Length: 137
Image (cartoon, rainbow, N blue to C red; front, side):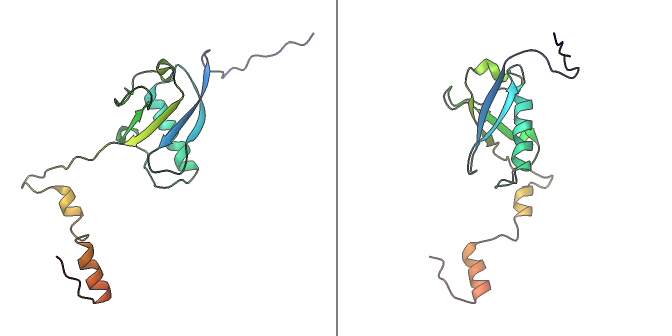
């Protein structure tokens, strides 16, 4: 009779789930296995790392605080990062980037307006690069 050694680094007992996370603007879902007791924040972090490892576009970044995880079948509210992934009862999710809020500097100007100073108008860019006259109205 053979005896099997139990792995020492085995995680907590529990059901494991294959989840599918669709990233808004990406070509397809990311699929990976998680423990049903894992927190939503940890799942977002794992999804961002998998997304970056696969070299997918658009580039998202790695800060999990910049993202919401939604359950499309449960409603329009974002899931709390402190809930467990298994408490939702579903396996398909959607990852969306949080909308950026403009930050105001001391003098009242927004920092986003300062960083976007050179972007300007697309017609002005075409005029400058092609030396054409395009009417603005």
